[in-house]
Image 1: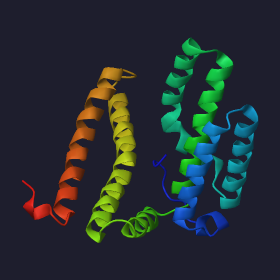
Image 2: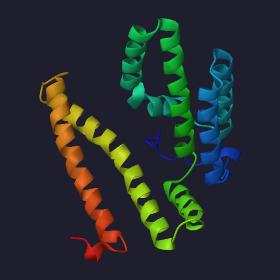
Image 3: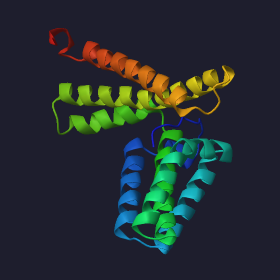
Length: 202
């Protein structure tokens, strides 16, 4: 999940090449679906805890990384209760939580610029340079947009609370969506402006 801020460090996890970490993330997520079971999930969780410890990521940052996804995980749990039972629902939620934390470990220990640069180099081997640059640019801007939505929600929530609107979801959702769409439009304009073909876009 690319909603976490980079935590400086000099651990083995920090120094690992970005593409190696991306590849390991892909393998872990794939393995969790191919090898379904509590044993596989527990093993992946323990390995993840070990990597967080090696990277010296404070627990409060780990909690902050998973917090934005809690309501989604809650909805998934309720849905699985209707489709199966509470054991399977718990397994599905924990599996998603492990994958989210694994993705968070990537973003917590990798600078966005390094990750985008590595992806651009990899794409440059199979795509024309201009296409690789455009894709990496779009990825970079999108990675900045995701935490921006989180920040917008927090700003709106604090502003509405200060106005005494409490936990009114309508008061939270409507301005958040409006501001997020405006931010998305600004990002789209930035992509067009910085694209090699930007001046010719109508």
